[in-house]
Image: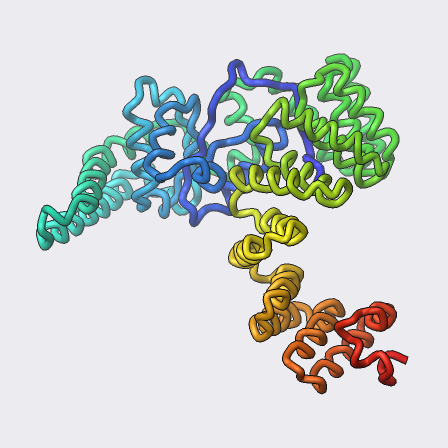
Amino acid sequence: MGLIPFGGDFFMGSNSTNFISYSWKNEAVVDEIDNYFKRIGITFIRDKRDLGYYNQISGFMKRVRDCDYLLMVISADYLKSRNCMYEIWEFQQEKNYDKRLLPVRLEDAQDILTKEGQIKYIRYWENEAAKAKALLNKIDPLNAKELIEECRIKERICRYIGEFLAFISDLNHPSFNELKAQNYRPVLDFIGYQNADQLAELLEIGDIASFEEQEIQLDQFRDKYGKTSDYYFMRAYIAGENNNLKKAKYNYDEALKINPDNCEVHNNLAVLLVEHFKDYDGAKSHCLEALKINPDYCEAHNNLANLLKEYFEDYDGAKSHYLKALQIDPKNSSIWYNLGITLNNLNQFQDAVNAYKKAIEIDPKNGNTWINLGDILYKFQQFHEALNATKKALEIDPENAIAWYNLGYQYLGLNNIRSAKQSLKKTLEFDPSLKETAKADEDFKKFWDDDILK
């Protein structure tokens, strides 16, 4: 469970819907932008999270037309992406789309500011449309429904790409580096964030290295603007960073007195109560309140699920909230991992295996996931598969005592006594305290009278 660095009571002029359009190849840049805005309560709709809600990518793209603002991250890959160009085509069908569009240019797309660069992309899409049409001519029309639609999409892109590039080049749009240098202020101004000046000041205070100087600046902020919810939030965050935990809790409580509908404060306070005060009921209450305010708050779903699993043994409730979190962020390997543990506790073993495999697909370097997968495969008496999974964990961390321990009893499942004993020896080499565990473990009964456990 992690703290959100900043969350405020600065709201947009209306309940706006904001999309971010980008190429998947630029996901690291977009994550950086996305994480910045999540700190201040703006969540962009993006396919990484939101495609889980829709049956087809085309249905997701059509929602672009209804959004209030579109942040477009332009790169060479973006301009050559069929899906990205289709998103923009959808957006351009709406009136006043130009007033809702903010392009952000990456370095490799600098050439769109020149006619020569624009012609390069026009020719690229002319060639793509020609290739699709040539392929269509080789197929019986009765069998070409999907290809016909693909040709239409690429022809649409061909027709508008030149006008689109000319329009973009005429806009006074920032590069990504310029945007970062200005602390993303152009985006805040474009969207129409209220009290953006106050927000910018607090963010600058949060970046000050000296705790004493931060305190001075916060006092000056209070004298200038009064005791706002965001003022208390930043005080709480800074106090937590400096391990002043009671002070952090006090300031979060004060922030909620002023603005009880700040879901980020509820979430951060829940984390604080769990990790430092062991107030699990209080933490649960704040997680539920955060979700009442924002039912699509992924972090709150995940934190509540962790609470229910670890401290309330409410595995059905935990499962429900993990699944909701995964609807919002389906590429989060940690959530898949914890869902696997929960499903295992519910004796839903095959579903647990599937969850672990999904976690591994996203993050194959997490040794604990391989260990848990091996353990559950062993329960299915899939001994060879269990061994292979546990060996994967040891490839990642050769000194993982738990992995060596599990490998030992998995070898016993194959009646490989020699390898089991070697694995147990390795276990005790890295964690001698596991000797007592093995002496009480029926799986290692064969070695209870052996010198290795004496």
